[in-house]
Length: 284
Image (cartoon, rainbow, N blue to C red):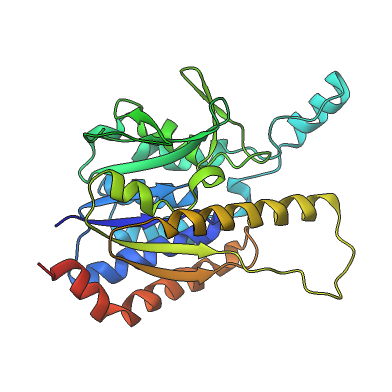
């Protein structure tokens, strides 16, 4: 029986995946494959290349806003020079430079642990899955293959629309995997997992009447959150494999100072479900 660990997107909150991996290590369980979307794909990729969990914790604790700065020069140049908005508000280069020693210069199909990374094609309006292609059909998905380098796959999966630049791959314009499949339990089933343990970073409704008058950015972000959550619920409804959902709710996407607590919350959720998790990994 193959057990998949599935890590959803959720910005900084996806560092909770480190807490789940720490919990599994303490329980003596190792997933057979990993599936990740958006920032969850970053955590899954780091573990799949063999990065020790303690090093992952230190890396996460060292993250600051300087790793994803606002690209003022690009914004100003586009507005003043071409009178148009830029394709991205943030500069991801510092973050990718920090991760490249681990994720760079290796194909996704050459990892110690099988990994599947989900992005979204704006060109075809479908999710794209990078990883070793299993037998059978992939209805509703584009199979990206295992030859793509890991860093490019993860960058594409994490390219939040409007915040990070899209990635051009073959004939596709790729953005964040969460647009089409934020919690890809269905991908785990399609690539051959018999069971799954997933970390679902859910986003609760924050607007309750009476509330302050929102600005355009608030409306855009909250509208995307509604669409992503509804797609996630619909995809889970058709899932056929046994699975355990470890669910934590986020509050703000860029809460770097809360990373220690986020990792601990996910660890506590894992240990609280230890009996179910033991059965998931050991049941014949």
